Image 1 (cartoon, rainbow, N blue to C red):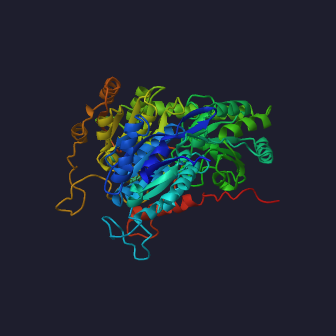
Image 2 (image 1 turned 120 degrees about the vertical axis):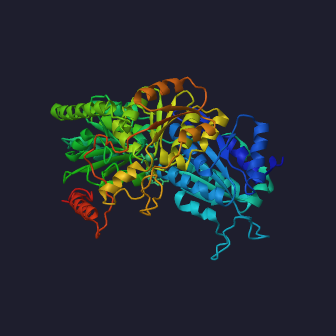
Image 3 (image 1 turned 90 degrees about the vertical axis):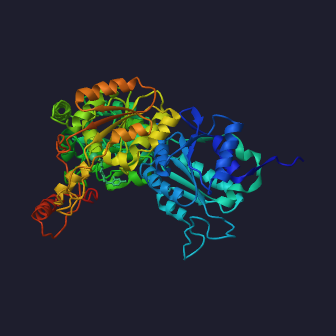
Length: 633
Ligand SMILES: Cc1ncc(C[n+]2csc(CCOP(=O)(O)OP(=O)(O)O)c2C)c(N)n1
Ligand SMILES: [Mg+2]
């Protein structure tokens, strides 16, 4: 009998070697699961994971390539954007030191989990042996020394483990991989690594490092559930599809189009689902909900059956549960995750979007909506498109409106560009104004709507698909929160085109503030005025174009839409990262969505504006629906 073969490695070396050997497969195509690993080193990870990444780079160049980041939160955004662009079929790992480097990643973890995107986080942790506590940056939680700052990852991770002993590593790795490659369970996966354990050696069974293929499932619908869903749809006169991110991740956009065409059902889109159907398709109504088009929202108001596909029904999608206004409205929910399929008391079809759409198309063969119904949608969509055309060509002076900037970027992006955005006033305008021509051309992070995602996310998109031009739209507020990854873009030669929209403050929150009767308080970037004692002095003299230049980006300063268009054309020819700076007028509204969003207003106030806002709020609240399902017979 021969002894089983083993390899002597540290925990960190074993982990890195394992990651480099993982592969994913769907529809017969196989690929490396991890394309790379971003990291910032400190005493909590450099001797462990850092040393192991160095050995990996020398041993097998090109596998698990290391990228340096400037901020740990940003590198998780890059990882999340990468996974989204790759339809969750591959992922990116992130290593941090112990303490603040680790907790910086918590925001990124929440973003990934909320958006159902796989990221692997490897925060350093305090000594398992605890021989000289407290170590630098240790929390010293009085209720128990087995608690560290990394426990804050638990509620924002779909899988969390801490490797107190080397023997625990293999089961943690297999558990992590299962969750990362399961579309129903995926999100942030965190493996906390005590700094002493990372450097500890052990004889590992060789099979731990064998190439391992993880099959990403496409669960098929249960026949009885399919029959129930088909019966509900057949009973509809005014069915409406809400396409979410799941349609795109499942690569089901072709099946969505075929299903919608065969059954004559108009299609609306969530933020993550935007791009599922081309904007000019005869059944496309565009964005739904609080940031939606009037076409989608008017049709939603009167829909009798809503078919949600791969959507988590956020408050923006349902306009805080006012969008679907018919008393007897029913929902059919296709979702790979049972928890999402069960929402709004819907008829659940727990399955992969592509499989479910194929099966439903078969079950509904020969059935279709009335021509007059489809015609109504087409007419409303045409009206909306004219409104978009006017907003794109507003010609506002002296500073252009933001919608005109969006129009110019839309033209520059064409069919192969990708637009990236996350927070501020742009996501809402992009959702209803952007004319999408491709399922991967629209990348707005609106699950967490995290200021600072934009540039870091743009890097992830570009790394995932270097063949496409990436246009990052970022407000001055978001830019000031997290611009530093421009340095990473320069370092790695990652070509992104950042369009910085300068409006001297939080325009989105300013507008929202007006609606709640709070008079734009605290939303403009102004000096504290000596006389008033308030932040209502002159505009702060920041020059963010100069800032970007100082970080190494090529910068264009545009003042008019004409100059913006020229700069965008020139930017396409630049080899490295570009930033185009433009000032807009924050007070020009884009065409509205006629929809509501629930943001509570003070119930009592000394201010007239607040009292008026409260009245309007109470009136709007009346229309909010519980969606508890049809009355039981
Ligand atoms: C990290 C984070 N903090 C706060 C918010 C709340 N918030 C949403 S938009 C916004 C202002 C964004 O400002 P800017 O990027 O300049 O965009 P603008 O609103 O001017 O379009 C704020 C503070 C957020 N979404 N994310
Ligand atoms: Mg701003």
